[in-house]
Length: 474
Image (cartoon, helix red, strand yellow):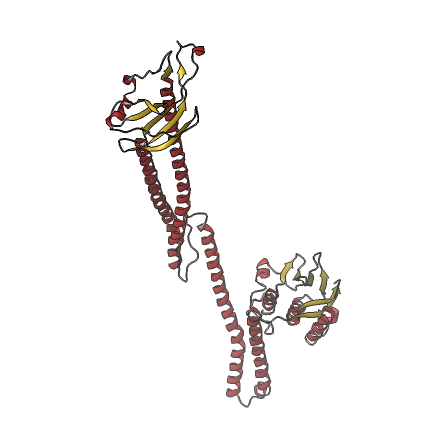
């Protein structure tokens, strides 16, 4: 099992580390190149100065070099070196070379008025850089150019130690490395602290979830919770609310089932006790068997309805889609209900404006939904009112099934909201033993299983309309 904290800390450390590494390496390269260029420029500048000290006089070449102004060429330690050649013979060299026996500087051949910089090991053993230049000395101001027929080419090598510069660059590199390592550990430390601080809210939320019991209503809001944790808490509270509703529904359903079964069981017990107590009473014994059988059928009806409700909500609900003629299906449902409502043909008005009566759907689902909705409309309609069952297509090609009737009792908004709850009845006294409040619940479950949209509307004229939207077949 991986850790979000470790992944987050490692990812941020790597990302920031790479960025810092690129920045520091770029800075190091730029600094090295700049220092190296400045050193080379200083080397060129100093060599040009030395070349400017060589002049052609009337009868000789002079090197006007004053030792007091350039002590770096005189000392032995931390010294600089130069050597000038004329026709392959040493013309002049710095006093610093005199401290080393038979030591001359190296010269790199270059074109006239050209120069070349190269690395060299100095006479004192340290590493440095040297510049070799080939030049013609300038004429003195006292010399007439017409009197000079030829000027010899001269050579110069100037060598300077770069050990100090290298040491400074090494210190700079080590400083950058130290800053880089410190920054990495500093960033990691800060990230860990920030992540731990933010995760504390998540740990607190987890503790609150662990402390929940059966009586918990919701998880309290933390004033310091972040925008990322707030949706989690809201979703958990929604889940708790749904669970509370489900538990309440289960309790109500259990109570209603017990109530529905209690009445017929009590009737059977009462009839049996009366028959045992008064075996010779014809008024009891004559209809005893038929009464018990009627009560048993009523109990069977309740159990069958409950089983149908459970099956319609089960994941194993089997759906087989095939082509169905809606006209034939409506006639079959009407015929099936005719034994309960003999005047059904006079009470229901069927209308259809479908583009095609053929629908690809599950026949059992449509038949069960249609039968329960029509049965509900026939039973609860006010006397001498018509029921309208219509089928039509909407602009998207979906099939709209509507069953509209006028209720015998005025319904409240609470009644409408509870219509699809199992075993709910508007008549709280449950005076009608043939109605159990399961039909609409079964219709709702089957609609959900098939992906149909089921809705109900109610107006001031006590007209209630159940609408089923069957999506267009693909």
